[in-house]
Every structure is written in structure tokens, then in C-alpha cells.
Amino acid sequence: MKTNLVSTWQLGSIVILAPSKRTLNAAIMAMILTALFLTFSLMLGKHGMTPDDFITLFKGEATPYQDWLFWQSRLPRALCAIGAGAALGISGAVFQTLTKNPLGSPDIIGINAGASAGAVLWLWFLPNQPIAIGALLGAVSVLTIMLLALGKSWQLSRQLVLLGIAINAFAVATVQLILTLVQREQAQQLFGYLSGSLANRNWQDVSVIFMTLIIFVPLLLLLARRLSLLTQGYDSAIALGSRVDTTQWQALLLASGLALGAVLTVGPVAFVALVAPHLARFGHSRLALLRSAIYGSLLLLVSDTITLTLPGLFRMPVGVLTALIGGLYLVGLLSRQVTNK
Image 1 (cartoon, helix red, strand yellow):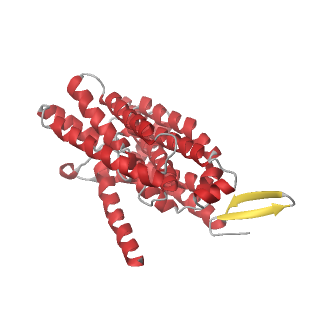
Image 2: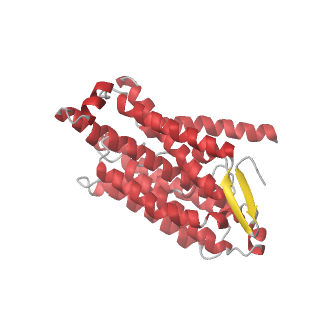
Image 3: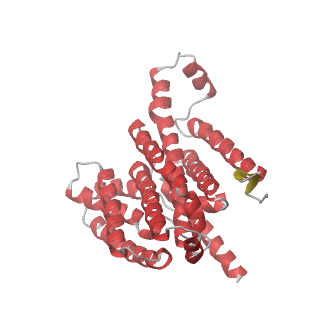
């Protein structure tokens, strides 16, 4: 049996699932584009590398500046974009599956808002400590509050959205209050972080995001079959032997872990987790997760590459550009839904 996304081959009692030609071609094309934009991100911008720089670098004849530019500046930045984009893409795909909502993303439960509130509170009370620690604590606090509030039996598609609205409102109010109290220099520092930024990333940031992927992605892939059953409805999933509540809890925690890793690495970047799964177009669950990872990486890397080419007056954190792209995409998505009705 073949579909647009998956080919199913049966050999006796053995059923083999494989990506269809269309799915495989799309994934390969996305990976090629990611590699292409990785090269662009290293070459473009005010301090971009030239082809001669690459040649001298790989000959081992690079100057200290060329060596620093590649190994300590541009490459860590690009790898953080790829890793964080993949984490957000997978996380968004899981949230949209759990909530049965095309607008589902980690933002829906307030992880980004919690990270923002944690960052401003941390800077206010401990101005000499890394903001990322406060952002991580804020995001974890939101996740803990959400889990305690939901209890053992819940319907994600309903209660999670309502909780997310409440948490986001409280977090936004906290951010606005603290921003009126801090000094101008602190407010400028917060703006760069709260928007989501890839500036000044280092190998420690790279290790954080890729360790997050190594830990959480394989566990989510093990849940892929049970997640695909949830798309058929709770009653159908239960009838097919799936433990729905357990699957939801596990998937929610793992997807939130990916989002936390991305927040810790690049800050609360908006809309990547929302848009990437739509670009991937859901099919078989394992393939959907992997394709969402590829498109998330591509989206964040392309956005960062664009910001590197903007003139100084229009230079912006990558999170601002993803918010603009995501906002336009959201308007188009809602308009299409209204038209279809």
C-alpha cells in the first residue's frame, strides 16, 4: 500500500513502513537547503567568510582571526540555529498532535512566556548572573505549575489551552512590570534575550542543544506509534490498546524538554514550533517528527542568515524575524480556515 507520505510493504506477517518517494525527496531537498544555508550563514554578513578563507582554513594556513571567525563565531551560531530549530520543530509537532490544534506549540502552555518572566526576574534580583539560568527556571516553573494544575485525568485539547492563556497573561504582566523598574542598560540587555537571539553563541551552547536532542528525540520516536493512534481520537486509541493518559504525559514532558533546551540555547524564539510542523505536513508519526526537525532547522537557519545580511539600521534578533514570519503565516492559516468554512 502506498500513500503520499508512507509506503507500506507486507512480507507474510511482517509489515514494513518506509517513506514514500515524495516524502524522501522532500526530506532530501530540505537537508540540501539546510546545508546550503549553513554555508550562506558562514559567508554572509559584515564579518562573513570568503571562499579564500575556507581554502586557507582547511589547508591549515588560516590566520588567528580566520580561525576564530570560523570555529568560535560563525560555526557555533549556525549549529545552534540548526539544533534549536530541530528541537522546536519536533516539540511543535508533538503539541499539535496532543492538542489536535493546528495552532498548538510550546507557546500554548506558556513555556516561552515563563522563560521571559524568569529572565527579567533573574536580572532584577541577580543582575550579575547569566540570564539563561533565570529563563530556564521560569520555563520549568511554568511546566511544573501546569502539570500540578492538570492533575491525573485531563483533556489536553481543552484544559491545556486555557491554562496556557492564563500563564501567558500573568507572565506578560510580570515582564512589563519589571521592564518599568530596571535600568535602561538592563532593559536593552533583556530585549535582545527576550526576542530570541543567536548572537555570541559558543560551543557550550552547541553542546546543550545537541545533548537535549540526543536525550529526548529517541524517546519521542519510541512513542511515535502511540502518538499516531491519538490522531484517530481518544476512544479509538483506547480501543486499539493505547494507554492514552500515559502517552500524553510522556509526550508532553518530552516535547517540553526539547522546548526547554531550545530556550536555554537561543532564548524564547517565537513561531518556529508553530510553523515547522505545517511545512513538514503530517504523515506517519516518525516521519512527521523527523521532517518537522528538518524544517525547523531550515526555518531558524534561514531567518538567521537573513538577519546577517540586513544593514546595521535594520539589524534585529532572529526571534523578531521569526515572529514576523510566523505572524504572517498565522494570518494566512486563519484566513484559509475561514475560507474553507
